[in-house]
Amino acid sequence: MKQLLLIGIGPGDPRQVTYEAVDALRRAAVFFVLDKGADKDDLVRMRRALLERYLPQGGYRLVQVADPCRDSMASDYVEAVRDWHGQRAALYARLLEQELADNEVGAFLLWGEPGLYDSTLRILELVRQRGVALSLEVIPGISSIQALAARHQIPLNRIGEPLTVLPGRRLGEQARIDNVLVMLDGRGAFAELEDAQLVIYWGAYLGTADELLVHGPLLAVKARILSLREEARRRKGWIMDTYLLRREL
Image 1 (cartoon, rainbow, N blue to C red):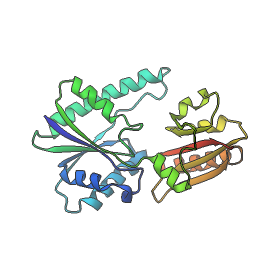
Image 2 (image 1 turned 60 degrees about the horizontal axis):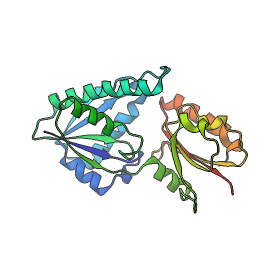
Image 3 (image 1 turned 90 degrees about the vertical axis):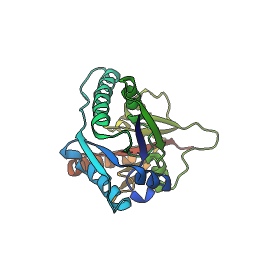
Image 4 (image 1 turned 180 degrees about the horizontal axis):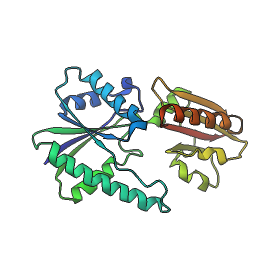
């Protein structure tokens, strides 16, 4: 039986790691880190810095491997993601068998909240289907959604209104937008909206030294946000952002 911790580490600020997460870090002997390539070295470096901050005495192993690439040009998005998850499941199964002894505790450090737009739980179910016996423990983390609301000093919900959370690729399908949180928007889907009643609360690299924040009427600020996104992507090689679209009452 492989013992595995899925530790939510927040959106980027190491001070937002919970006491429960720190306790979990101290229990783990092996940390598994996926390397997404040179353009995203920051993501590995930030995880290493977090471990050095909370485990200065060392005493753990870091297993770093290349992350399989998803086919971003595939015509069938769902099928491409399923194929990618299958590749990851095969990789995880091999790592757990080769790198984690039955008397050791392993861990994945997951951005934000493990249960919100993170595929690790789903992939580990595929690992189980491959015959690997797992004992899992999930440690919740602060999500980028919570960090966004805190930075902009706004409540996420309004009285009597639902709050919708969706990925950027589904934004254009909405017949009406009243209170919508958007994640995983690689192409800036908000730029296609021409609704003069919408206000946007946008944030990138939340909780880090590179944090970017913009708030205002969508039509007035969307060009600025697009410019900031492109500049940041060129400078860092990647961007991690989220935003709230809200209709003015």
